[in-house]
Length: 306
Image (cartoon, rainbow, N blue to C red; front, side, top):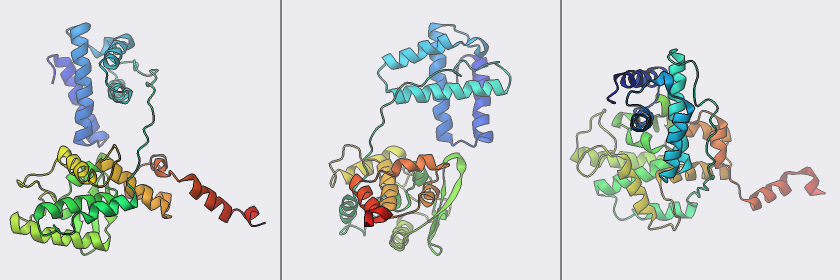
């Protein structure tokens, strides 16, 4: 990846470590390596043409961090890049190339918490109604099913993109999802979703080979869908029914979790459906309206009845 053979050797070892021992996805690994590459470019340009990880100090890394901040990228992005380097130095410690991690005491930059508003139930109904007259075309069926699966399973964008024909079991009404770190989970399908999948597969096999290993979702040219394709699809349809600033696959996942919890779903069950490793990640979706909390409080507390 880099001109420096030493830098290349250890980043390749790091890649193997993330892939084999940490079971990270290819997408995550590539992001880590890209961040390391950016630092190496900075180091070779501003400090030393030869990268020796044993003599990289916090001051060197701090200079890179300052440059990132001055470039105008968000603090969140800077923190992610620094986290990649911190993980890399932790690995170098693990293989005993360095004695300490120069980023061990680094404090992350402050990040403003973004309020992500889910789509309302009425907005979801409106967007699904856009397809009522067009569900005999492959592209319309595909688009409708993509939105359906996002909203009824809480699936991540990368998980949806990597679905195969074999991921679907219409008899059991389940879908097999490969999540972060290649963790597999089986998600239930609503009867309506299952019927839509069957209809989609009937049209699919008329135009393309229905092979078990084939991607479930294809572009109009028969290629596997990709991240930008999915983002544009969601943004395009929801722009017709919603004035919310952010319209993305993640907002649909957010809507899935929020609507389940609002209607009484157990937090642990939602955690399993989302594929979260901890409850803390799921709790961000528990944004109850204060009026709902007041009503629950009044109806449930024994003193309220006196």
